[in-house]
Structures are given as structure tokens and as C-alpha cells.
Image 1 (cartoon, rainbow, N blue to C red):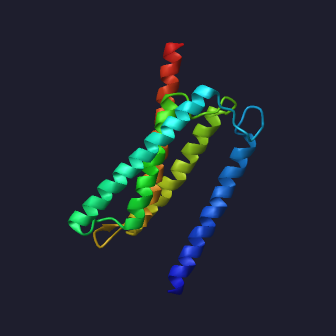
Image 2 (cartoon, helix red, strand yellow):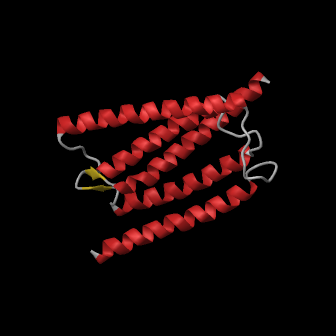
Image 3 (tube, rainbow, N blue to C red):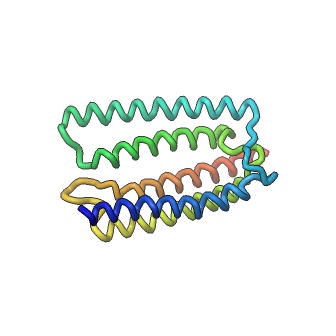
Length: 176
């Protein structure tokens, strides 16, 4: 029992420290005018609102499908906590990708390259942790996907997000 408590506390403090290490520099220098407040115009606010709506509907739909499947099959080969977090990540993905493709994700005063670099660094860190969990056999136990799969899920989500940003930038350069 104490091993689980130690692991849990270590995990929580690790997440807090890692988040602080990543977020503090990002918050200090992410905007062009050195202000923490991001500036969005009215069109961007509408796009962001639509993105939130689509993300919400996505999460509700996937949650209902998950619940119906769970009721029908009794259990699935994935821990419920992992499935719930994956559903949330899918909602975040819908929001991010929709707003990126429609010019609502980045604020008018935000530095896009710095954000992309930050996403890549976080994706690489998550990928390394996920591969470690995979090699240690912690990702799948007794045929059930565990919570430890989430690092790989986050890495894939961030890499897709970076790809969407790069596609959008390429499309914008072509149209200009």
C-alpha cells in the first residue's frame, strides 16, 4: 500500500514540477508584447466559442458511446480512468484542431514558433516516458490497457497538433 502511495505522490509532484518548468518560461515570453494577456479579435472569439461547442459535443458523444459499449460488453480492455482521460484529450483535440484551422487558436499577440517548439518538447518527453512504460510492461497488464498509456496518447495528440499548425501555415503561405 505504501508503495502505491509513494508512487502516487511522486507522480503528482513530478507533474507539478514538470508543469512549472515548462509553463513559467512559456508564460513569460509567449506573447510578442511581453504581456500574459492574449488578445483575440471578435472573429477569433466566435471561432473559439464554436470550437468549445464542437469539443463538448465530441466528448458527450464519445462518452455516451463508451457508456453504451461498457453496458453492452460489461468491461473493456482499458482502465476506466484511462478511457475517461482519452475522451477528454479527444475533446481538447477537436477544439485545438478546429480553432487552428480557422485562425482562432493563436492570439493576435502570440508567438506561434515558440508554442510549436514547446509542444514538440512536451511531445518528446511524453513519448520517451510512454516508450519506457511500454518497455517496462506497465502499459498493458493482464490484457488491459492501463493509465500509463496516456503519455503516448498525449505525445500523439501534441504531434498531430504540431502537424495541423504546420499544414495551416503552409496553406496560409500558399494563399498569400
